[in-house]
Length: 377
Image (cartoon, rainbow, N blue to C red; front, side):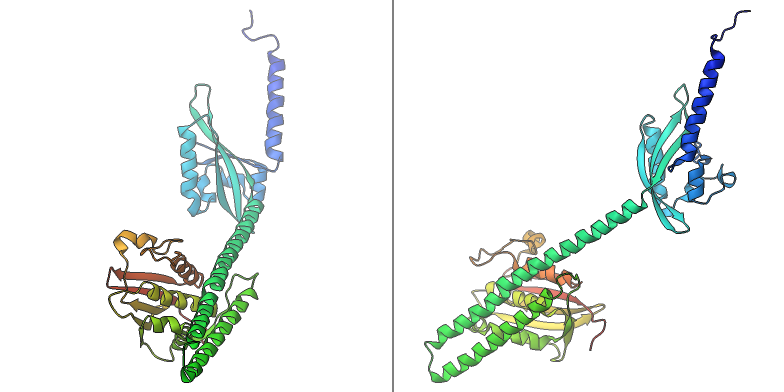
């Protein structure tokens, strides 16, 4: 009787068996994970390396749901990846999953692929994976370094602005007083020199506060100290008194003389100076400028409020731009569009926030929220 098998069938069978042994040896003796699941997601195979690394007994896990070895937060990610395998049977799909280990959480990268029979019907899901925990840790370290660099860049922007704006305001005030001095009588000259002395002391305080920031170049934390709010506001107003006098400004205080903040002195000065000069810059031509300052505690914040009766802002039209860089609203020639951007940046660097309310041609109110002191003196 003639055989239907080729003459070398036994030889081919031996080759196939050797190939199977060879590839199984690779899978079972190399340092990558290999598992298979049935179409219900239950384990049907675990290679020895996977079992060794996660201290698993395959006899106890074959037939159990594979998702039980994945943390709950990653369940949906795993399910979605398996769904992609069924949607695109001929394509491998990659996913990063975290697995619990007695030494801590392990990050693993997996290639999922659907195994098909000769007719193209799905049989199992093959998953090949490897440990990428060290890579993830290096990425986290790199991201931390990027975050520190970004924070230092923000500080540099704030530092540069304080140099260019705050110090320039002090100098402009001194120059203004000196110009007045040339036209004043002897009695007024004495008063003017007192004003110059105050401005110089205020300038010195600004530079001193900037030195605090310079001294922590490699630290993302800003130095903080206890500051009596009214004293600081009055010091800043004295440092630019000529500007307020020329604008015939009335300033009203609605808080305790002893109210304080524990915060960064340079940033607080910059915030106050910006919001006060902002009120001067956008005063109404139709009435005397009035600035109301109030201060109170609300939950985890202490809130410093600046309200003026100036030109106001159309928040419906421009509210989303008010704290943007280079955004101006009233066409002032000296407006650069940096002040409110810097204020927002500085208060957020301190962990707080800023809000604005305004009515066109009526008033504008800025609410600056400082995080409540943790360890006041």
